[in-house]
Length: 69
Image 1 (spheres, helix red, strand yellow):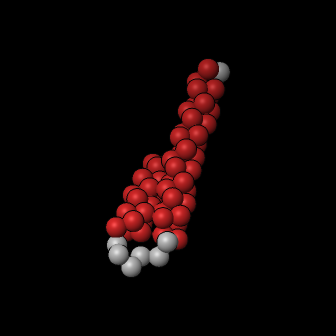
Image 2: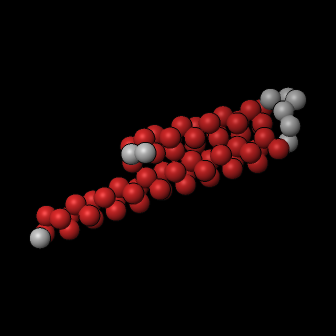
């Protein structure tokens, strides 16, 4: 998976987590665990975003080493 796709997946996952949290908070008959599940999905999305940044930095570092030689 490319860094851009991983980043986009992170953004979509964070958005999905926010929607789950909002529905857990504002829907009348929503179960209590939806707030925790939404937060867990947001944390997963941030992990994907951080992973894409680290992968992009590693690729950039390798490209810089190839041009220095």
